[in-house]
Structures are given as structure tokens and as C-alpha cells.
Amino acid sequence: MLAAEGLKAVTTRRIGKKVGISAPSIYRHFESRDAMVQAVMAEGSKLFASYMFQALEQTTPVDQLEATGAQYLKFAFDNEVTIGLDLPLAQLPAFSGGRISVGLASEVFGAQDSLGGPGYLVPPTVDEDPALPRAVITVASKSRAIHLQTFGDPANPPFLFLHGSLADHRAFLPFRELADAYFVVMWDQRGIGLSERISASEFTEEFVVEEIDAVRPGFMGASASGTGVSYDYAFGLQAFEPEVLLIASECSALGTPFQREYHVGLFKHVILAEVADAGHRMFVEQYPTVLELVRGYLSEYSPAPGR
Image (tube, rainbow, N blue to C red; front, side, top):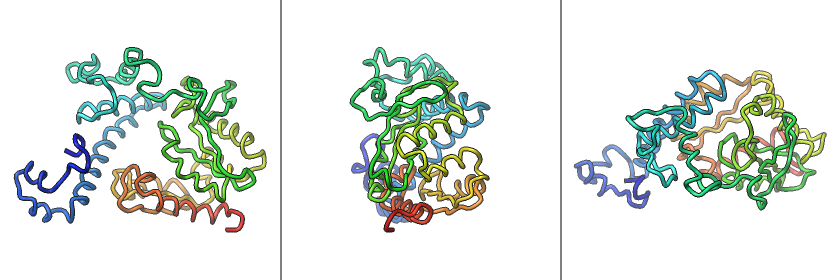
């Protein structure tokens, strides 16, 4: 009901009728309709995570990336999730007989020519759309165009926003509010988001660090101090001396218990903050709370002028 008709269509009366109980009986199990919806979202997140974790069983980063795409589409198919394709997934050869393969991702996205060309399944990248903000950097001896924006005064302490998502950084643009005290640099790393695509040989830890190094002098000046955080992190978590802020969402399979078990022990010094009433998309769902946490952390470790 939630997936098919949206949140407004979800009422206790309709749910009670669907499961064969009276609407008031639902409140014996949940405090409110919203609490019930949050529980459903949490279970959905756990189910999705169970698919994604299977991709980590692969031994190389490239295999893990390919397996992640296959597991994402397997999740969508197994659970009848719409992923924005005007193409019945069940009609694809890779799904015949219930067979799911790593080649599934390339099979689906390779169909874009018949679906309208570049930009139909994903927005055009910076090398395809000249209107997008960009910068050109050289990494792995190759010049690549990246989707990059800066906000604020370059004289302020730098704040590098590496979002770590396969999507582009536009969902995080509200964080440009930090430009009142920091020089905010947001970009999609090479090969992801709206940045130019790269070959597998260019996607290594060494070249990720080289990319940060390429961005830093071009947009913050060679002596900018804030980038030390990125370098320390890249060269080993245990070598990272400053206290780390980990932000966990309450209603997510990757929330506080997961962070405490798998992430806290990776660093020497950790602040673990939980954001209530938020799921996997907490940066959007509870943006003011997350921003307050980030400001508090930055003010202590990279104090802005006059703060």
C-alpha cells in the first residue's frame, strides 16, 4: 500500500481491513500510524541491507561493485520494487527462470539505447552536458571532468564534502549553509554521480587520494589545512588522530548498533551521535539536526573566524 499509493494513502482503517482486524486493534502494537510506518521502513532497510552485504563476499573492489549492482536489481525484482525503468524486469533474459547474474546490471543499463539514449536512465554527466558546473583534474595521468561546486569565501577554513555515494552531490546542497563560515567544496568523485566515467584501472585507493590532492590546490590553495583529515583517513583509519564524528540514524539497519559494532572500533577516538526519527536518508529527513551536529564538530576541530 505504501509503495503503490504513497504515505497519504496509508490509514489504520485500510490497514486493519487488509489484515483482518479492527483499526483500534492496531494501537495495541503501535503507538501511532507514523510509528507503524517507521517500523515498516526499518524492516525494509534491514531487508535491503541483507542483499547489499552479500556483495561484500566478493574478493576485489571491482567484483564488489559489480555484485552491488546485481544485488540492487535482485532486491528490486524479488520485492517488486520500482527502480525507474520503463522496462519489465521479468522480461529480461537475466531474470528468466529466476536466474540472477552479475551481468544483470550491465544488461539492464546496456538497454539505454532502446530507451532514449544517454541520460534516460541517469542524468547526463559533465562531459555530456556543458551546462553542469565542473572542473577538470588530472589523476592517474588522465584528465577527467568532475561535477564540482564551491560555496563561500576561499579565505575561510575549507570543508570538503565527499559524499561517498554513487549518486551526485545535489541531494546534499542544503549543506552549503556551512558557507557562512567555511569554504565548502562539493564534488562527485571520478566515475560516480555526474562526473565523467572512468575505467576500472583508475579506481584505486591510491588514485582516490591523488584526486583529493588534485582538487585541494585548485580550489583551496596549496597551504589549506583542512585537507589533512582526508589524507590521514586514506592512509589508514588507525593512523587518524583527531576525534571522528559518526552520525547514525535511529530507524535504519545501518544505524547505531551497526555503527557501534563495525565502525567505532576502526578509529582511536569516536563521537557516536544518533539522529532520532530518521532512516537511511537522514541527511534529508533530519537535515537541521545533522547540520547542528556537523557545525558542533567543525567548530571544535576547524574553528571558523569569529566562532
